Image 1 (spheres, one colour):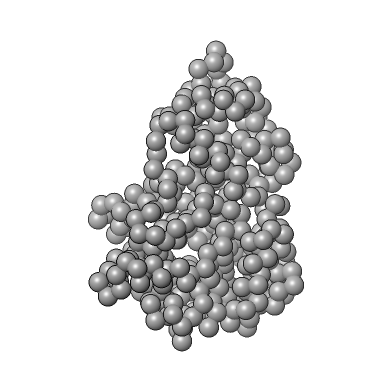
Image 2: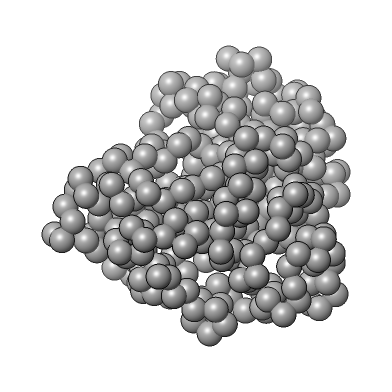
Length: 330
C-alpha cells in the first residue's frame, strides 16, 4: 500500500517550530538585532527586540558579501511596512532582497533545528514534553515498524523547511530496534522512507548512523558561509510551483491509496500547484484544527472539490490518528 503524508506548518509547532507568520516576526527581530550589533557608526532605533548573542559576528560575515547596514535597514523597513505575514510573498514583491531574505530564513531554521536536536537528545523533562505528539504516534501505532516499512511505501511530502521529522524518525527507529535490527539493517529500513521538501531545506538528511542534522554551531566565518550556501536550497511558494520536487510529490499522490494532510494551512497557491492534474484517493483525510466551516469550504473549492468536507476533521493530528482514521497498514 502507498501512503502519503502531506505536512504543513501546523504539523511541527508542538515540537518548537513556527508558523509562517511567526517566522516573519523572527526574521524582523533578527534583522534589528544584527543592526543593533554591527560595528559601523550607525544605530537603529531599538524597539525592545531581544538581541541575538552572535549577531555582531554575523554582521561581519554579511559585510564580506557586500551587505551593509544601509541595505539591512532598507530591508527591515520594507519588512515592517509589508502587510502580508509571509516571507514568501514579501520576496515575490521585493526580489532584490532574495539573498538576505533566504539567508535569514536559514539562520532561523538552523537555530530551531539545533534546539529541537537538543530537546530530542536532552534531559528527561524535555523528552517527556514531546511524548504525546504525533511523531511518537508513528511508532505507537506501528506505522513505522519494520514490517510496515517492508510491506508499504510510506511518503512524507512537507512544505516545511526543517528536517525535524527525519531526525526524530532516525533517532527513534534506531533506539527502538537497536538490538533486533542493528545499525546496518536499521539504515536499510530508514532509506525505504521517502521525504520531499517542496520548499527546500538546509540540506539532504542522511540516515547514516550519528550523522544528525549538521547544524552544530561554530563561531567562525566558514560556518556562516556554509549557511549562506545552504540558503540557496530555500524556495518560496512561487518558486516551488513547478519544480522537480512538486512534480515528484504529485506522482506519489497519484500512486497513493491513502493521503493525509497534517497541519496543512490550505494556502491557495500551494493547493493549486499540488492538485493540478492529480486525482486524490477516496481515503484522503485532513486535519482542520481551528478552521471554521467557511474556510473548509474555500479549501475544498481550491482543491477543485477533490477533498470532501466530511474528511476535513476539526481535530489535532493525534486525534485524527486515534479516532477518525486509524492507520491500519497491511
